[in-house]
Image 1: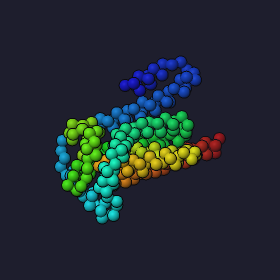
Image 2: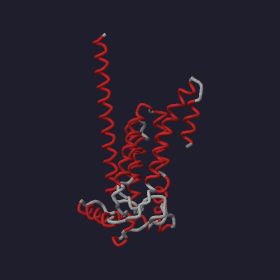
Image 3: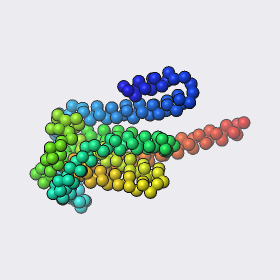
Image 4: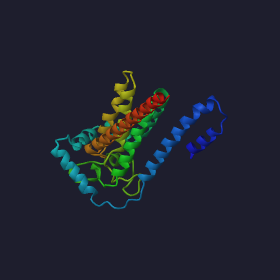
Length: 260
C-alpha cells in the first residue's frame, strides 16, 4: 500500500527533474514490494496435508548418501557443541536473508542501473520457481529426528516459524531453499557486477547461507542445489531473451536505414 501511495503521489508531481528521478525508482519499489507481498501470502497458504512430506525428506537423505554428499548431521553436531556458534547460525538464518537482498537491490539500482533489470528478473524467476515447487511437500531435516537431526531453533528457544501449522510459513516446503536462492542472487550479482576486491567477501554470503540452512536443520543440501539451478535457468533465459530483443532491434534499425 505504501509503495502504491508513493507511486500515485509521484505521478502528481509537476514535470521536472524530481519527477524524472523519482518515478522509475518508485515503480521498481512498488514492483518489488508487490512481489514480496505475493511471496508472503503464498507461503502462508493453508496447507493442512503433510502426506508424503516426511518420506520425501527421507528419500532426499538417501539420494544425498548415494551421491556421497557430506552429511548435515555431522555439521549439526559440530555446531551444537559450541553454543555461540549455534546461536550465530540460528540468528543468521532468521534475520539476514531479506535485509541483504534489499541492500543488494538498492545498491544495484543506485550504482549499476544497467545491470539491475537482469538481476531483478533473475530474482523474480527463482522466487517463482521456488513457489511452484513448494507444492510438492518435502519435510526439512529437523522434522526427521530418527535420522539423528536436531531442530536447532527449538533447542535454543528461538523458533523462526513456530509449531507446524501455526507459524508464519509452510514448514513442509523445504524444497527448494528460498534462503539459498536469495543469497545466490546477492552473492553472484555482486561478484558479476562489482569490480572492487570486496566482492569476494560478499560472495561468502552464499556458502555461509548454505552452511547455515543445513546446520539449523531447515534444509537439505539438495534444497540449495535446486535453488541454484533455478536461478541459473532464470538468468540464462533472461540473457537469451535480451540478446534476441537486441538482435531484433538491430534488424529493424538496418531496415529503416535501408528504406531511407
